[in-house]
Amino acid sequence: MTKLSSLFLMSTLFFIVGCKTENKITYDMVLKDGNLIDLENGAINKADIFITDGRIVAVTTDTLLPNYTAKHSVDASGKYILPGFWDNHVHFRGGDSLIEANKRFLGLFIANGITTVRDAGGNLTTAVMQWKKAIENNDLVGPTIFTSGPKIDGPGATWAGSLEVENQEDINKALDSLQAIPTDFVKIYDSRVSGENYLNTIRAAEKRGLITSGHMPFTATLESTIDAGIDAVEHLYYIMKGCSTEEAAITQQLQDNKISFWDAMPILQSTYNDSVAKQTFEHLKQKNVFVVPTLHIGHTLSYLDEVDHSEDAYLKYMSPGIQKTYEGRIQRAQNASEKAVQDRKELDTFFKKLALTLNQNDVSLLAGSDSGAFNSYTYPGISIHKEMEAMVDAGISPLDALKASAYNGAKFLKKDSDYGSLQTGKLADIVILNQNPLENIQNTRDIYMVLKNGNSYTQEDLNKLLQ
Image (cartoon, rainbow, N blue to C red; front, side, top):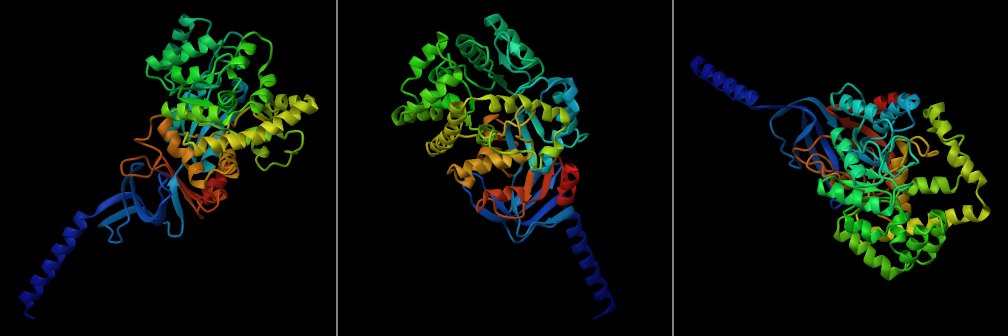
């Protein structure tokens, strides 16, 4: 080869290499060769996920990778990748003295792979909004917070900070104040609100295009609640009421103050009717109403008389102030009659069957722990894993239990353009597991890495958050 030919060849190679270098795409992070779980259908595909600025830029199952460089590369071979978990029912509450104690919950959520929480009402709204902004700005480690702010209830409401309504003017003012915050949805509670004001609140929120969820006063029927436009029903008491052949009669008795909420429970349970239930489930599905079973807390509270929680691993993460708020429920359990204790346990068993039947009838479920102050031994972070495990224990498939977390949570809040699945353009809120959760739901606890807000948290990082 002549000197000129050699020089020409070297120039050509340099040009080709130079062009390839110029055409390389740079990503912040690439997850390589992971088992990507599709929550829509349970399919698992080996894939590479490309992330920049906290968003998924590309997902490919092609073995011929594009010409790229990455600031960080994660070997996810043998791991299982899915959207970060959502806890669709938590509480930040307890007053000013417990602000810091509630703030510490944020690290517990991330340590458990929970990248989003739905705060279903409390009295720390100012602090919650500050945390929410700080998390978005990467000034604080924690999950995305979607909050209802203060609950709406009637005069003399049980929970501090509630917006109390007695008439339509009160309802309008309450909704005005929530929109001014602004909150992400409206939470209605049932301790003092009349059935009429409850339904009127839902209707008024519906006219404003607001998302609603809540308890349901037993002075209203489930059918009227669904028709008013409720978007989610918290807990199964209210679903059970709508499945009873005696709902109308029991509603009247409650309106006449002849029986109490807890008096109604065994009656409703014993008058559950498959035909009525089928109609109720169809109504829920037709109106796209989500249901939050909260099975784990129901079981925990039903067995306070039997289970010693003093050695719970997560109890040590709860401040003395938070632990003190547990006393109310513990004392009520200790002072309950033998019949009340037995009724509660039978109800717990019944609710497992009801949750499964809802699932079998294609009613959309939301996995929520109800964790926070006052809810004894239901700990922020770990409890959403226990909730999904309770769903599976009830007979719901691991896929549907997982779907009830991030996938359905995003749909309920109409945030599925950004959350709920791992697709191009969506936020890279991701949890990487060491084992397949579709084979064993307890594998959701075996976390390899969490991605949130463009940050990655290794097992060591997650352990430090627990410290």
